Image (cartoon, rainbow, N blue to C red; front, top):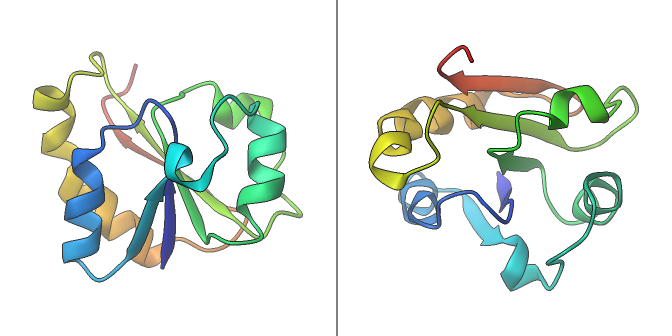
Length: 110
C-alpha cells in the first residue's frame, strides 16, 4: 500500500511500515504541510491508498463515502512516540486490511 503519514503522526512509523513492505511518505515530504483535512484528502487520494493520522476529529469532519483513500487513526491518551509505538503493529495490520473509503481506529478508546 501507498501510505501517507499526517503531520503529527510519529515519523518512526515510516520505518515500521516500510519494513512491512509499504511505500510511505510524510505530509512534509509530499510538500503538503499546512493543508486542511479536506484539501489534504483530495490531493492525497491521487497518490496514496491510506492516510495515517493522530487527529481523532478526522472521522467526524470528513465524509469518506466517495473517497478513494482510507484513513487509519491512531487514537491515544498521549501522542508521545514511546506511548504510540505499542500500536504500530496493529496499524500495520489495519493498513493491510482496510478498503478505500473506510476509517479504522487503532489504540485507546478516548
